[in-house]
Every structure is written in C-alpha cells, then in structure tokens.
Length: 482
Image 1 (cartoon, rainbow, N blue to C red):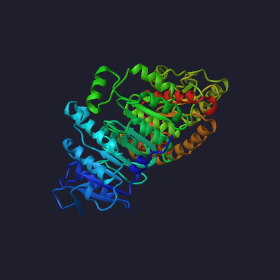
Image 2: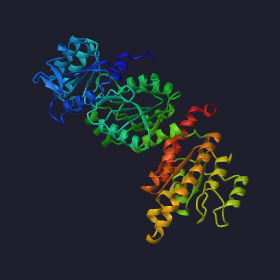
Image 3: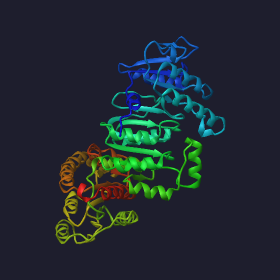
Image 4: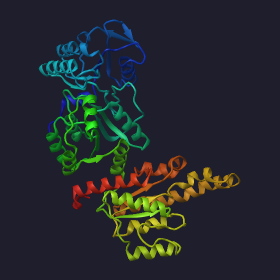
C-alpha cells in the first residue's frame, strides 16, 4: 500500500480556505469557520466570501485564487450550481485536496447527478482529490483539525471512524464518548464522488495513530477492492462495520441518502466474514464491540460460563448466548467443588450459575475464570450495584445504606482489580452486564471498568452479541495468534 499524500494533508493541513464563509449564525459557512478559528493550532485559515470584507475577525477574499499564500485544503459550502466554478478556482490556485460539504447532487438524481459528474471531471483533470460531496467532512483529534460545525465531545485515542452518513457518524462519536472510546480520526464520506470508503480504509491501515477501524456503510463502490484490503488489514487491525440497507426498503433509502449502491446482503455478509470484518447490527453494537476489542482478551473458543444474579436472568442470558451460536459447557469438577464451598445448597449446581438468593460475589466469578472448560464468562447483574443501593432502600434505611456505600464500593474495587488481573493472566474475556441504568452505571465500579475498556453492558443480549463478535474474530485470526 502506498501512502496517500492527499489524505496526509487532509488531516493536518498547514493552511485551509473555507469557500462559502458566512457571518450568519447557523449556516454551514459560519459554523465551520468558527470551528476552524477555535482550533487553528498555528494553521492559516482563510475566509472566502465575495460579498463581505470581514467575517469573525478574518479578512475575506473574493476567491480562493486571491489568497496570498498556498492553500493545502479547501472546504466548500457554496450552493451546488456554484461548485464547478469553485473547483476550477481550486485547480488554478494549485489546491490538491478539498472537502465538499454541499448537498443536492447525485443523491437527488437528475441535475444533481449531472453537476456531480461535472465536478468530478474538473477535479480529475486538475489533480484535485476531494471528500464528499453531501458530507460533514473530517476531523483529526490529534492535530485538532476539524471541518465539523457541530461536533460531539471527543476523546483522543486510536479508533478511526468512516461514515457514509454524517448524522449516524455523529451518533457513533457521541455513544463512543459515553462508552469511553477515544478517536484518532473521523471521516464523513458522503456521496464519495471521488475518494471512496476503500481509500480511507487503505489510508487508516497505515496510520500509526489508528489501531481499530469502525465504519457505517450504506454501499460499497469498490466491493472487490474493499474485501481485498480488509483481508490484509484485519490481520493487523480489527475492522467493525455497520452495514445499513439490509432490506429492499433500506437499500432504496440508502441510494436516496448518499447515492450508495447496495448489493445482495447475504452475499456481502458471507464475504465480510471470510475477510475477518466484524459486522454490527446497530450503532450501539458498533461502539460496544469496538470497546470490547480494545479492552478484552480474545477468547480461545465459544464456551461461555454464566454467573447470574437470579434464575430469570440466567435463563435470559442462556437464550441470548445460544441464539448467538455460543455454548454453555458443564463446569469442571474442581469449579463445582469451589462453588459448593462458597454458595448455599440452593445454588443451581451447573452452568449457568444461579446463586438462588445469595449475592453474586467475585469469589464465585474467579473459579469460572480459572475453569479450563470455559473460554469466556458472562456476568448478569450484581456488579456495581452498591452505587445504586441508597436509591432502592426504604426511607428509614436510606441514611444507613448511604453510609455503607463507600465501604461496599471500596471492597468491590479491590475484588475488581484482582478480577482484571485474572482476565489478563488467563486470557479470558469477562462481559459484565446490568439490567438497570442510572446510579449503578455511574458509580466507581462502572468507571473503573470503563477505564479498563471493560464496560458494563445494558443487557444479557447486548453482552452475548459482543461476546459472539469476539469469538468470531478470534476464530478468524486463528488460535495460534490469540
């Protein structure tokens, strides 16, 4: 794979021109210029507007051709009929990389398709590579460069996201922030008239700041190339894709949204598996699988032990695991003996482990991690619950329970540290799920898990899906590599 100098420049330009800068709050030209100014980072920012002399404290220029210095990247927000003229100006100026935010092109058909074709021709003849149109553009969390007018809070990290939908991409960023993911780069690719999803994946494979690639895809323009790239990349970096447009209705919606062409879903699904690409069904799953890949050891197989807070939860978890093709093996005699010494004679005496009224403890979990007949553990309930106890207690008990909270959390944190160490030592993932939200998911235990990228998941079903994706990816890599 050869380095793409256009994309190197795209993510950390020394100079950028916003064509279509505006002084009107709420317009793309205002929002993006505000972002560029607030994150200049020694970068030259030029505002292009032929009707105003100054915007947000910056002198304006009538055309990108009038800018006195070189322009590494042009960001374009002008109406679609003006795009061709702007691209000609970029060619004359010697701009080599552009981000076209403007919509109303091929996704609308008719004249829009004609205008997009004209834009492509001008850019190709002039040696300009561009992102979009019909997109939000890009950001690089490490260089600080961003073309997004409105952007959710983002942590710096090693996860890159490529999304053919701007809004869906922002949803991934937002949920990723909640789940503790840190991002390296984000690309809202839009219609992909020039640079395609495959170009970005190829570039990110070589990006030293990126260790995991997430994607929201409505259609692949170079399907065969993507699969060839993915087969190589997934041996080194995981790729997790949410492929929208599974149904006929969804495929039609994808075409009208980003001019994407969607192929037969079943064929694509099989091809992705052969190349080691992990497929997620929802935005939430896309993020949750990403978190698990960064924080959890990969399982050696599909045998799962379940530790549940109650019988109903145990049944739900068992069904969820079996629906994902995972097995619940018998526990080893040694594990049975250890659990017998911890639990009352009412416990389920099998897998799943139901304490039958006894509180789920880490002393029950540790034998399951050490059991060589299991490859992973799914914990349902019990973890981090002390943070929520004050809200559940009767009024007359609340003061007492609240005073006990710190003591209980201190003890659980100590046990949790041992658990995290055992997970790494045994190379065995443990998926923690809770059936409630609120205090339990915001307590100290939950925060410690999130710091280790071993977050609490909202349900047994969510935990089972994540575990299934880990098993699938581990199987792809082969047991000699995990």
